[in-house]
Length: 496
Image 1: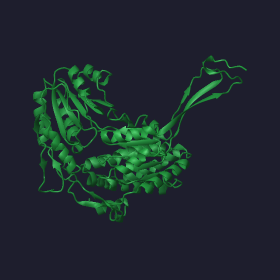
Image 2 (image 1 turned 135 degrees about the vertical axis):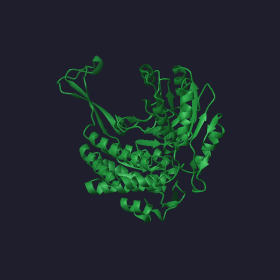
Image 3 (image 1 turned 180 degrees about the vertical axis):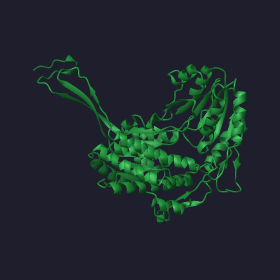
Image 4 (image 1 turned 45 degrees about the horizontal axis):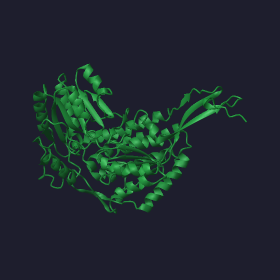
């Protein structure tokens, strides 16, 4: 699908991509997609002001009516799934199936949010005082700032937007400067939904394009009570303290250094398939990518050769082609980081070299790398955003869990075993210390029904399903006295 066709189907004016100063290039071949206009500090300030005004009106709209806007938006996404998915592939380089899957994630979270619009439940609490009733109520909190990364250029925004809007908030979105065109497309489709529903305050969704300075301005603005930021741990270390200093709330989705443990009883064929997708999907550019593999010594000699064979059969190429399984890295900097990591790995490297350079001289395709590591007291501690899988042997489950947890990150994890005790231990307090822990599936590919996020340097935030919606609201505890007396709590006497 050509860019002009994609833009026409979405209804995005090509002139939007002609007159800006931010050059956007496709990682597929390095070709120029367009030049996008960035926003000044004054424009950012104005957008936040508009978002505040929109919030003041939107918070008074009944939640089911807010859900109707998200329902209409989901239907528009269904209508334009092919075009938006193709644009995701064109701009960030993930394969066509993953581009379509990302749009499906948007649809799924919208469906979840529509149901949620009639289920923003509070609690009724027993009071210690006779004739009294206590209750918790959840209220909209204010404009929500969203800072998203290039690797999921539309889904992460929608995770946050759908919940924030249903909860009664407005949103301000700063996409990655590497993927602003998909953001423009999303904003256009959302505007279509607003026009169809009507009676929606202007400024409910604001799009701000620029570099790190735009994100920094959003993080520092006291009018934005919640900032949801997705990116590297280094980015989180900058955003988190700024938001905390003004007593704002940060939802941080940061780096992952995810591991899979393969036990002696594991179904090795299933494990190979899961490891392969987890390690090489999106060219290793997911926060949930499998980075470390802990293999029991009894099955190491069977699993690792099978994995190498699978690596050798992976089809690398243009992500628009249906048969491709691995597309390009986002840019040369990502390739350089991968080569530096492999150069200092200290293990036996299989793969990792640049491929298709003659066909795509301005793009960065690589053979996914598998690194067999020597026995060590600690596994690799740093995340490299590239398809590198570090493989380690272990002797006991105690050793595997210790190695698994002995990293700064704590996002996603998995164990392959047919032993019930091993599986349950991995999921228990004595097992994985990650926000996501799986049995007999990989680390990558979370469903929207569960809360998504991790611990430690991953940030501790939660997005998507379960009760993640509470992160976009404020809680009010209320007590009603329906008696004719005025007893004090804790039995305190204060009589005149």
